[in-house]
Image 1 (spheres, rainbow, N blue to C red):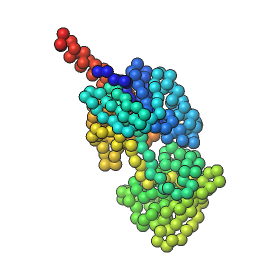
Image 2 (spheres, one colour; image 1 turned 60 degrees about the vertical axis):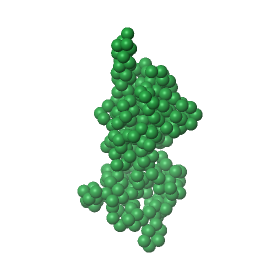
Image 3 (tube, rainbow, N blue to C red; image 1 turned 180 degrees about the vertical axis):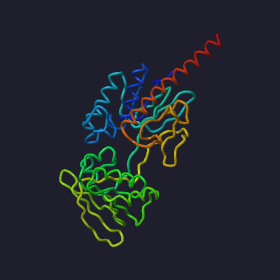
Image 4 (cartoon, helix red, strand yellow; image 1 turned 90 degrees about the horizontal axis):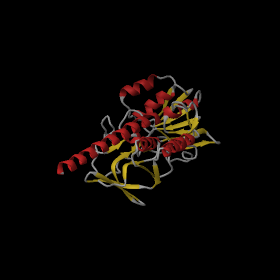
Length: 317
């Protein structure tokens, strides 16, 4: 079976680069295809302080370290936009905008994207007070007023979590009742540091070099008001990039890819790791762990495939 590569990884974030490092280190011809720059979303993260071994490191620097480490072992990285993946017999075809590739296995490390508020100041202050990950960034705002936007399970749970750090947490919700599960709501209502501002939406996020306040609008009365704060955490949904393959994958109700313990999807030879996979949390640490398993499982899959072909050839002779 002749293919361009042994392993093709879709995505060049921490998961993709880790999978690439382990694939290349196993002497497998390995390619990572990344739409943007290697490093993924972590490259746009101002600071990281929860990755073991680094008490404090810039997100861009950590991304560069991931990339250089993977390249050291021979990972090939190209910038291209993958449009479709499908299986042709025993190998995979990866169609990108610039070129079509073939491989024995594919690892999906495509991540996902948080839904945006799409209000003035959101993009300007991303990494400067605007965040989409409480575990990642909560500790940077100790004893500050924190605003959380949303009303579902994630927003309420993360709001409760952020009370560990903030002097006060305001949960801004567009309706007069939360969508979160009742048990989670009860925990929020009992927390003295968390206050819910009902029937309201964030109109703009404002500041000077960093977030200083938000402008709110009451959707019932139309009255606008200013709320001083040091951070805005947005939890209004996250969309996994799981619709890239023509092959039918088993997904959970939210579109995350379901895998077995070896990170293999419902399609043999197709693996998934990181934020695109169904799991409890989305952190660099578990993305790296997922990717290690996926690369090792892909290596084993290739070995078994080659053993099968060798056995067939021997039987013919």
